[in-house]
Length: 119
Image (tube, rainbow, N blue to C red):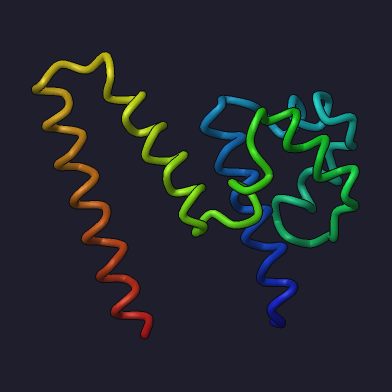
């Protein structure tokens, strides 16, 4: 698989992740973005190359910055994620925050272990 296909897979995966976090079905996203349901499915699977106009409609339908879909590893995007994490914790009790942080630390450790195993 070439780099370009990998990029489309990553973008599609990010679209799917954001869509599911927002509780949207593919059909709801397709309707909101004025795109056919099969096309949304192909986009999320990285099977198709989106036109810029389609990409913009997807961003608008999901109410996300294009940066969060294109370059999730850019420092500015990371600060957006940190802000979202802070907002998530804002109405939690100290016990809830402690539990969420422990889960997040365990997930991070698991991700790093998987990276090490893959290399």
